[in-house]
Amino acid sequence: MGIVVMLESMGFPLPAESLIITGALFCATTHKLSITGVIIAAVAGAIMGDNFGYLIGRALGLKLLQKYGPKFGLTPERLLLGRYVFLKHGGSVVFFGRFIAVLRMFVALLAGANHMPWHTFLWHNALGGLCWAGGYAIGTYLLGNEVLKLSGPVGIGFGICAIIIIGGSFLFLKRNEKRLTEEAMKAAEKDDRLRITP
Image (cartoon, rainbow, N blue to C red; front, side, top):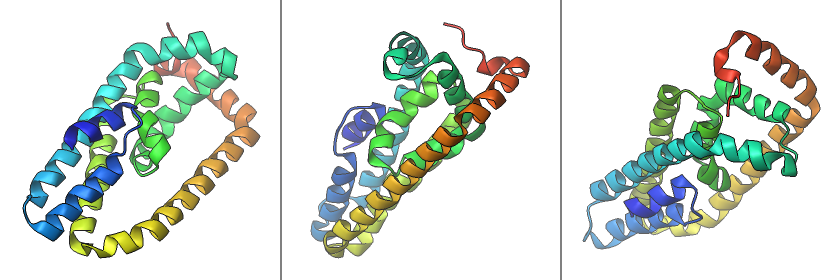
């Protein structure tokens, strides 16, 4: 289980969330597996996977974004804006990104590519991994078979919330892109962490 969770956190499209729920449900219904082991494996896999994803993003991400980004509308100004957002709000992005399936696969890579400070990333990643993996495992274990009845509506609810949050963030960035880019450029003059060097 820990390996699948780790690989998903590194960016591979795997069903880590479903695996955590299934493992915890197996513990609750059969008592043949320790819930403590499931929690430790899931949390450790989540934290380790994101750290590996961060390192990959840090080593290769910026170069790839600079090379191929313009083909997808990622101009140098937008790249600077991304770094600015990760520097100012990266902790929240990393923590809450853990709970959104698509973002969960890419947030560590993006944090590394945008050179988010590692100590900030590590803290929010560990807290997010603990709450996400531990929360799903403990919640499923305590609810037992009831989780199967709740998972559909709850999943739909989370999906709707994720779409609203991502859509709202996209609209906010689109409407405020020029102002935020100007802020980022002023900040880059004062802060070396925002300067993009290949």
